[in-house]
Length: 429
Image (tube, rainbow, N blue to C red):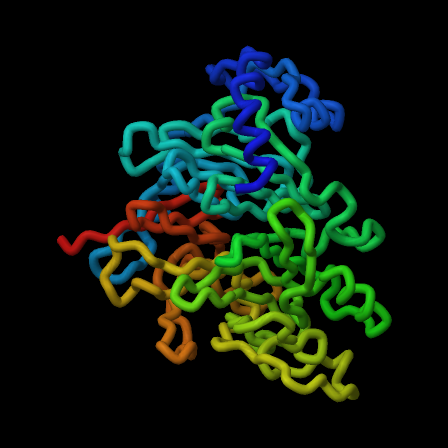
């Protein structure tokens, strides 16, 4: 238990009393003071004066259109998919360890809290989380086992103690463990590849995937990027200290998770663009120890060499992907499944989201994949588990981003195109 958590717990009653906060009843009243000054108040456990939390209306016409799309989603026998909630720009998912609330990020400036107060299988309330804080691309979102919520923005990392408790208020307890401008060099901030993802490892450290901003960066950038942990997965203590590069040679990973059996790290990676429809492949990788190099920029995906580095001799000891995915499907969020609702063959498997291609003659992706891992850590490949968001006309009706199991064993899927979160369940009948 960290010092931040102890301080937050001791101050919780003071925060609530000082804030005089009430649960939102309408979305029309904006939170006052959404400025850096408001952030300073929250760090000191002072109220910003905000009284209401913006609620997200669940539009019945939009819900009907989404359900029409879901009727065309193909799943293995016994599985069903339903609409869990309408969530604008829904990206990464973090299910609270207490099972009280699910948090969903965006690539814009919002994080949402989803609550199923009636245990009905769909969210009965969707509202903004920490609405008095200014976020900038808070895509990365993950929980520690003791209830710390972490959000990783383009160039900042925030820690929210007791997020499942404070989410009922506009003001929340928060600590910047990596201050604005300190995650990557400020002069390397880019609109490209700026969506981070995170997980807490079995060592209780915070792991963050940090993409590099180029399709293939120039050799002159290598040393700077390696030192900064760009094009890499970094890890740090939960208070932001002890930062180090855990794995590198990664182009732009937007999905990672740990195997609970051996505590090793698996992650997806997106390949180089502009090399053709069918090369290079996407990647599902396995990091078995610290310091491994996964081949970028010498390899653009799988064993495919990049044009820019073709004349260079790659380093020795590179680690190639366990699974080469179809080219340009945009493999993003992934999770190991350790629930009990799904049949036994799926327990311990990896579910991953393919967002869908943007630069391919024939579009591919927009589906949820499943990968069965052998005891020796190998896999025969991935196969579609839920598909149909790419319709028969070659147009997208949805674009899955992330997958995350719930406490009951069902599987949540986010979709930033449709602005929705889905729930996949299993029943033999």
